Image 1 (spheres, rainbow, N blue to C red):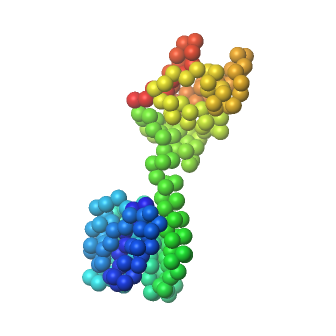
Image 2: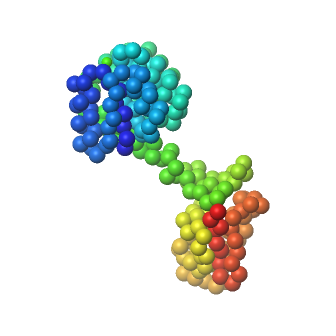
Length: 221
Ligand code: CA
């Protein structure tokens, strides 16, 4: 995880940096609002840990501007101000979490990990692509351009398998075994039926090719 710590008290930022690095995270530091904002916007961080009482530019304003530039970048506010109003303002401006100072290191690390996992799920790790085809694994949805469709469990696993082997010819037997877990039964037409339904859902540009007498191939580009 790449983490940006924006904190003007070096005692706290040094402590945080040491603790986060000990957990294997990469840490960058800024000691005022404008510098923190500039770094957050310019570099691909997974999380910003942000103090609110900062010189030059108030932390809440930093949250607002980070959110305006990078709505998906999580911000964890770490502040001595624990009043509800400030907290709510922080959340309203786009913060994802709020921890009051003094804080326990274990709790901070736990919350950092939660943000990391959340970020990872929302990442491109959940998206598989081949040419114009996009498979959103979290939503079990396949998309080509504006054409989006929810997939059944079987359709999803079939398309996922084809995408993971994009460009390869995959036999019906192998699809049956790998996707449905059946031993090959030459009478089963579950593969062909599922392919037909998938093509129908993906629309006229479905990139699934029939390779005669063998099986199917997902065209990669
Ligand atoms: Ca401060």
